[in-house]
Image (cartoon, rainbow, N blue to C red; front, side, top):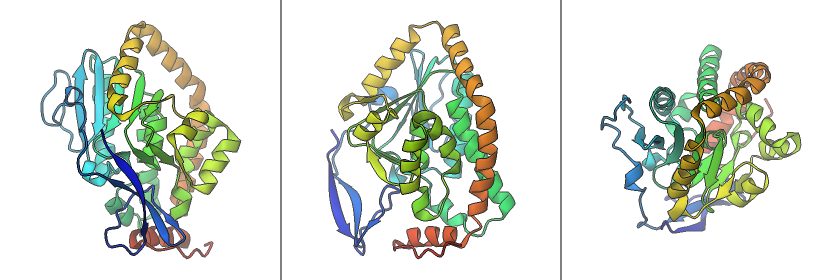
Length: 317
């Protein structure tokens, strides 16, 4: 069982580790420290990323994919980067979702390898955002929209098994699945405003899930919230002990698989179609807002201060 403890470390500590969940609180940073020894993922649910599986291409560099008894398990596989969302991971994930959709799998489980589910945007990709053109920013935004909508509108039932921190874009991935199971230690947060971003794209989905009042709280504060609060708000379905997480996900998948495949497909299509017109309109506006803020001085300062591990100096421009 993974042992975790929370340590408050001085911000100048040279061992400071980047986590999108971490941000300055006065002179300290909230950081998750972990023991060196912990149980790995259930090997029954993992296939090496380069091992062929019938009906699946399996040529992913940032994912692992297993297919067993009609259940596909997709594992974000960048544990050394806390499964941060890179452009390569986005591309792999979109292709993998297409592969699973075209396979014999009836249910999809999404989880993360190592200490986190996903800590948000990859640092190298974050650095590259400064100085990009408006056209490039719009294209980046549309790529993220494509990922989120592919997962949200996936024709087969999806289950997120959140094994640790799921921050910013990681929160988006975890909560866009039909079912979300999380370990007690899981952390969530729409932290975009804390580094000069606008949570434009995720807001369109969050409003549908929790309503305006709670959405305003989470999006405007950018605060981190735990699994217990996420459950109370209806953002996750269950809290599961770490040692039981994947077994519980498979149990739920097996129960879903007992239902008529055609009925599941048609029900998901019905739900998707009911939301599509509203999402189309809102997301187009979100893409423009997301791209526009990246041209601001506050955006550049937010990214720079985050990378330099210091307090931002906002100008409001």
